[in-house]
Amino acid sequence: MQVITELRALLQLRDFRRLFTVRVVSQAGDGMFQVGLASLLLFSPRARGPHRPSPARSR
Image (cartoon, rainbow, N blue to C red):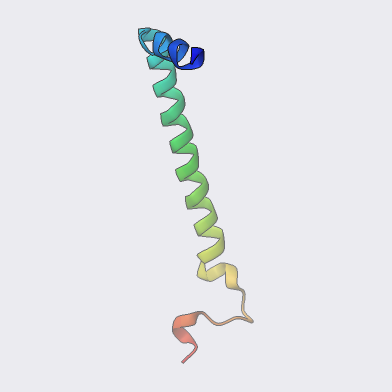
C-alpha cells in the first residue's frame, strides 16, 4: 500500500515526529480538560439545586 509507505517515510523525519507528538499531547490534554469540566458540571453537588437531594443524603 502506498499510504503505509508514505507514512513510514514521514515518520523518519524528525520534524514531523515532533509535530505529531505535540499534536497528540495537545489533543490528550484537551480531552482531559473536557472530561474534568464535564464531571464538574455533571457531578457537582452544587449543580443539583435545592430541590434534588444528593444520593448520600437520600436515606
